[in-house]
Amino acid sequence: MKTITDVPRGECSQCWHHAHASRQAHAHLAPREDCPDCVDHLHNGHPTNLIAK
Ligand SMILES: [Zn+2]
Ligand SMILES: [Zn+2]
Image 1 (cartoon, rainbow, N blue to C red):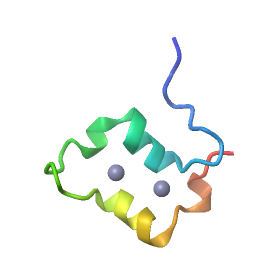
Image 2: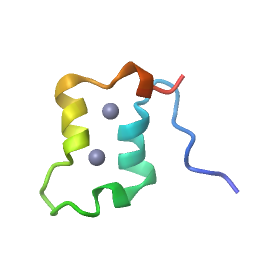
Image 3: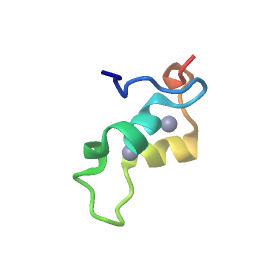
Image 4: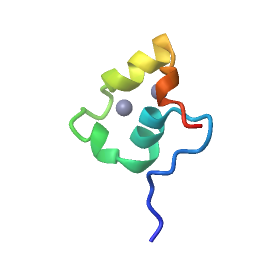
């Protein structure tokens, strides 16, 4: 069984997981509400330690 934890190289693992793997990461948000974690990355960039190598 293929796990969905394999983040493509160069992708931010947090954003990738939020977008593809763990929809429940946004389940607590209202439909138009922004995810603080994703917004933080959007404005400040993705921490290099989260970028898949
Ligand atoms: Zn990110
Ligand atoms: Zn998010």
